[in-house]
Length: 437
Image (cartoon, rainbow, N blue to C red; front, side, top):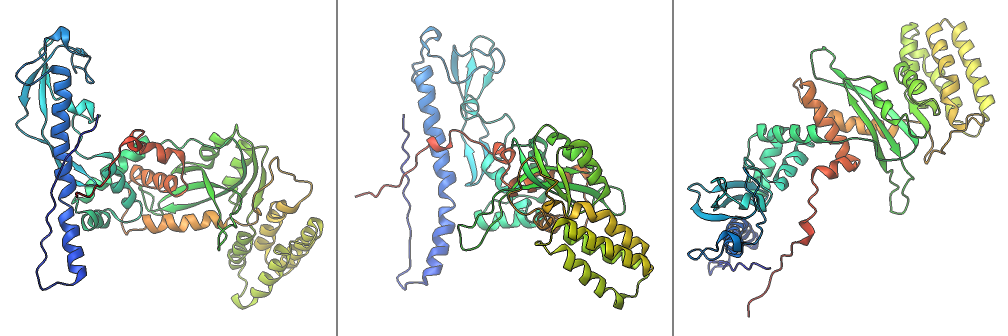
């Protein structure tokens, strides 16, 4: 059953032909008033048709035994028959939508069984009793707040589509979405995990609280002009340990788990993923050597030669694994003899895991889709997360948790993000423009 609404749009342009961009500006601003008016007229017409089909004409109502089953139910007794009209509500329901503010004239009915008076259109259109913001606008609040500070995101929304809101409104919708987000692992197996963590300025600790992320690369896409890496979100935790991050993956096959060498991460991998090959990022091995040489009080000018020797070993992918480990042992002994015990211990601790990607004796249960040599992909995502959270204020722990989980779920297309905004009947609605002749 179609409902047609006819509106007339009048555009008046002066005879002196103003610049075309001025005409575009006027038309766009004028069209902002069309969707709210169109939706209000549609709601009034559709509501009357539904009530007439169920209850009969306005002044000739059908008796209860002749009424068809209504598409709504009495909120008190759940009856679907036996209603009578009770006029309109004095105040129209104001809905803030992506199209602007829409005022709905709501007709009321009375249940003859329990005498409850209510507006049936709210049930027909699945509107909650106190809902004032529709899902499409809530999506925009959350989507922009994931990229910009709350005040800037609401300012952009007002500038782009003419919907004004306070920063607190955007914050509230983001928190509500974060509370209902389901981040359960969506894949049955993970050939490669890149795991890393950092800290965000939140909570009471002076240095903030930690958060950990696990990403799983898929096959690299080389079909376009520029190769692209497609990643899946395997898990994220805020202010919790690595065991909490990896525990949901314990019942799934994991091939290789690549980290920066953090002892807590390596320990959690051995406990939660005993079948996975624990590997270390070779860039971090070289980067951490600088810190160890500083602790060993080596002059800064003497460190370059040691970094060069280490890189010649780490990045020689053609060398056999045994040869690479022997060369790393020789470098460790030379550092020990030069009075750098911490640097030597660092390289000895990394010797096994940093060459795991080419060790023929360590065959993962699933082959890695990309070389398991560096954590650069997850490091890049960390920079994006820090860009959003480093805003000069201290976050609350629940606030930053919801922000980061939503940020990663949207960025890596997790099914939990899509489930937040699913509307199964959206594609069934047809809207077309027809030229009048």
